[in-house]
Length: 89
Image 1 (cartoon, rainbow, N blue to C red):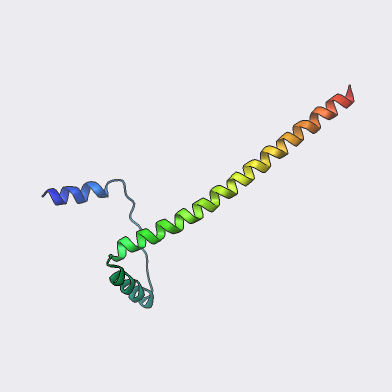
Image 2: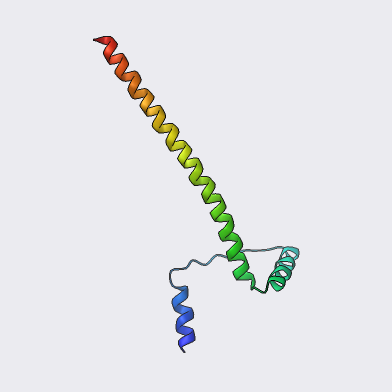
């Protein structure tokens, strides 16, 4: 009974996703999992997690560049506005 409670409590807050694989890809997945000694769910979660982290890192880098460019552009606009204001006086 305690095992069932552990399983249920570990599932709390998780989202279920389903994936359809071609038979050939599924056979390859099973072979890789057997070779590594893991089950398909654990393998897929690991691979998906790695891919998400890789893409998320790239996204964060891109956002940092965008934010930096936007800050520089805003500074330039502010300087130009200040120069225009000074030249009008």
